[in-house]
Length: 156
Length: 113
Image (cartoon, rainbow over all chains, first blue to last red; front, side, top):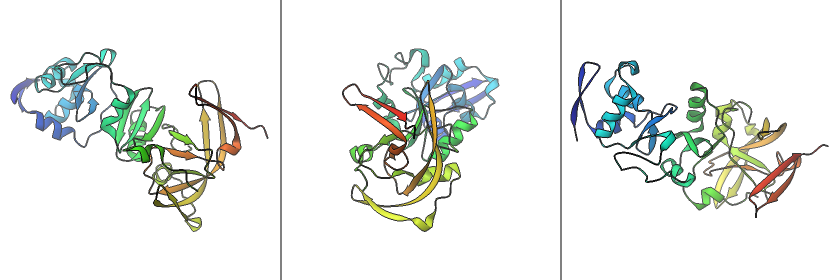
C-alpha cells in the first residue's frame, strides 16, 4: 500500500506503518471536523501528515491530507457524520460510549459527553493536553481494564 | 479538585466508605503534597494500598449550581481503579444525597450546617 505523494511540491514515499509509527507517542490535537483513526485514536488529518512529512500544516489542505490517509487505508471521517467512514475499516455506526473507550483501556481519558478528547498514560499528560489546547473536560477518569477496576471493593 | 479544574474527576460515591480516596498521581498533577507522616496501609480488592492525607478544596458543579468545600483526601498508590472514591469524610458529610438507582440519577444538596 506504499505510494509516492506530492505535497506542496515535494515528493514523499508513504506507507501505513510509517504513519502508525509517527503517531505512536503523539497525542491527537483537538478535532475540528475531519479526523482519521490511527491506533484507535482520532487525529486531525493535517496533524498526521505534518508529523509524517515534517511539512508545515499551512503547506497543504485538510482534503489533501484526508485523501492521502484514506489511500493508505486509514479510516477517515467527519465528526458531524461519524457514521459514514471510509474506506470501510471503521465502525459502521456511531460507536457506543463503551466502544469509544475501548482503545483507551488502562489509560486516563478526558471526555466531553460521549466524546473522548484525549487519552494518555497519566493524568499529568491529560491535564497538560487540556491546558495546552485551552480545553475543559466534562470528566477525567482511568478506563478500567476489568470489573475489579471498574467497581472495586469498598475500602475499610 | 483544586489545581486541575480543567479536568473534573469521574468519581464513585460509596456510602460504605469512611474516607475519600484519590489516586496519588492526581496530587502530583495538582501540586498537592500529602502528609506522608500520616501514611496508612489498607486493602482494596485483596491489594495492599498506601494512602496519605492532604486538605484540598473540592468543587461539585452542575449546569445550574456549584458548591466548594475543604476536604481531607487520602491520596493512594497504587490506585488501579477507574474512579476516585467519595466516602463519608470529605464528601458525604457535606451533602444530603438522594439516589434513584431505578431512574439512574443522584442528587447532592449541600448541607446547610
